Image 1 (cartoon, rainbow, N blue to C red):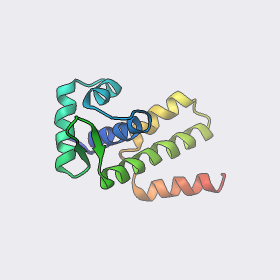
Image 2 (cartoon, rainbow, N blue to C red):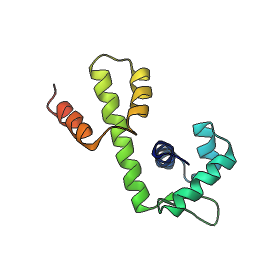
Image 3 (cartoon, rainbow, N blue to C red):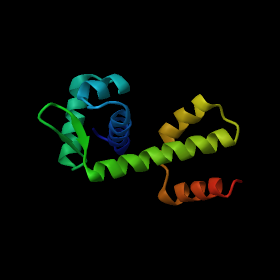
Length: 122
């Protein structure tokens, strides 16, 4: 895991999978992202080292409180940016794809401005 974007993609994926699966395993993350299982295992180890995730004795991946908070923030950016793009007339699929790219690089200042813009219904 070399970049913040990669780390955030893993966190967001684990977070979303945990909403639908009783246990999230490396194989689930690999399938969702389309990555090789060894790559996912390395990434999970890095998330553990950074204090974002734990792996229980049965191989289930659990986000720590810090990991969950970070993942929720990333997902919020995704949802808000998708809503903004749809509001300006972009189709859902393109809005989702572009939001997924932008959510990793948008500044906090810009994101707050986008949220406020949408909140005001502009």
